[in-house]
Amino acid sequence: MKRNFKTGLALAMALCLSVTGCGLAGSGAQTATEYVNDEDTEYVEDKSSEGSSTIVIKDLFEPLFDESSEAGSTIPEEEVQLVEDDETADDTVKIVFFGDSQIATGREEGSDIATLMGGRIPNAEVYNLAIGGTTASLEASTSEINLDKLTSISFIGMSSALVGKSDRNATLANYPNILETMNNIDVADVDYYFIEYGANDFFEKVPLDASIYEADQIHTFYGALKTGIAQLMEASPNAKIIVMLPFYGIYTDPNGTYIGDSFVVSNGVGTLAEYAEKARNVTEDMELYCFDGMFASKCDLYLDTASEYLSDGLHLTLTGRQIMGRLLSHIVNFEEMNEPFAYMETDFIKISEFDPYEYYRYDEGEMKKYFPESWEKYIAGKFKLAKPSAEALAREAEENGTDGSGTEDSSTEDSSSEGDG
Image 1 (cartoon, rainbow, N blue to C red):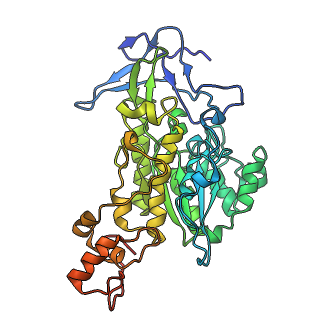
Image 2 (cartoon, rainbow, N blue to C red):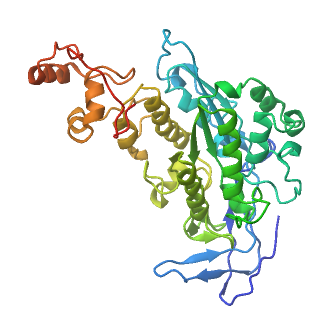
């Protein structure tokens, strides 16, 4: 597909821009690359922010992406299920994912982020409702904003369908497998929701937010996320909600020459990093978990490592998905008392050192020094997946006069400001 894109401002340069989106194509598609045009493309270099430069592309568009082409080989179940289920547990941990193709990719092969994460959580029961190419916001082509009448596969439409406000059969008429998955979910029993959107909102130039006086909030990124999450909170009052920021990406021309990244390339509304900031605003305003895939706070996904994390500049490779699965699992394992807060807080992954079958352990001496409240529970054997070493137990027994089993004579653990509940 070729388009002629022009802006009304002065600085022009001949470019062909290769962009990638979170869409799904038929089995014939082999790449997520599509070129803007063969002719001169004009863009604006925005230097309004001191020390930064933004390339504004007037008509960024979402190319096709074949989920199956990036899924990789099927992973044997024994290599996905990295921890054993607790047969003494009363119930399973029910986890629901909403998202675009970052979450949908690999679902058929069992190599999607949701499945990979679930394999690191005892008794996890994961439901993946992600659909490639979808936005958080209601599609611009849809004028109906009454939630009970929606048939949209955007997040606002999917959340409405799940909680029973709208007709899920009409919404998912073209997605029978997703409908079957949704029908197996009892919202009253959901323990965790993971929500990942932003890339397609960026490509569709969705407004970041609207005035508080405007009735139509769900055609905006912030408004749709907040409205959809509010529906889930009402239907599942005991569930924890984790908003995943859109993942960092890069943009190249047809020759593979780097043009810009998620902090530089703008759709005229904002950069993808600004959409990520807006998603983070939702978590701050609603007091939710925020998982960072944009700002390199949990792993080294950035320009120098993008070719290892990303298959096409945007979509995560199998290794990238395995990394995110491990990092995400710490959230649930912390909440379920499987791991200490220190594990969730300190695990930072470098892709060059990553072993997909490794179980992360934080240095015991460092935990005792910097996370004393985690340490108290850890040394007392409170965590299902994180048990103290024999050496640590012996040292603790010598220092504190314990019986050496990891259990003090009298220990009642309270929730702490550090985070261990």
